[in-house]
Image 1 (cartoon, helix red, strand yellow):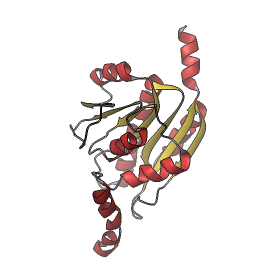
Image 2 (cartoon, rainbow, N blue to C red):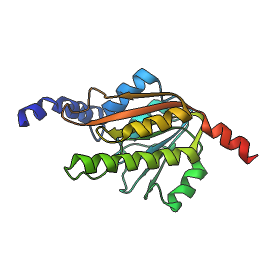
Image 3 (cartoon, rainbow, N blue to C red):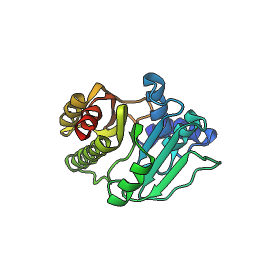
Image 4 (cartoon, rainbow, N blue to C red):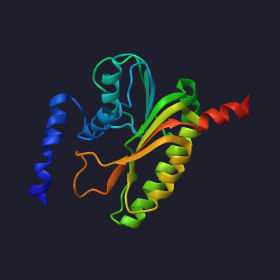
Length: 207
């Protein structure tokens, strides 16, 4: 097992060479290159951002345009000067964080590589992942701009089809992917939803 994990260290070495805090950046990079999620000038929300690899990739892609709001329970700092980065150390689903997000939103893209603390029991862990993604989707309903997109990590093997079906009702396009940088033994994959529809209906009802 150790030998198998050692072969995958090339991702970690590449991340270190390119200045990213963690290898997870290459999951986002592969998805973004295929789906063209990140565009200059957009507002992006990073849910569970620490240690900051996804945030740094977004900032480099935005090239000092638009803005990135990154929230995590743990405080984190990225090297360099990023005038379009706004961070908050808090539970992103709290009222305090909600007020902060509304000040900086709405967002054209919400990304989440967050995962629950795992127990080793797959049934328990997939349920925790389900609950976390469900909260991210609830957040998207209040923070995502019409036409926006959501990218989030989900553990396979639970009731994730229920979440997939929910996303299909609110977005034009919904896909699932397992990037090459995901470890072979991992049961994580990613849901991508693009073209948010429900926000338009909600806005019309509020007028």
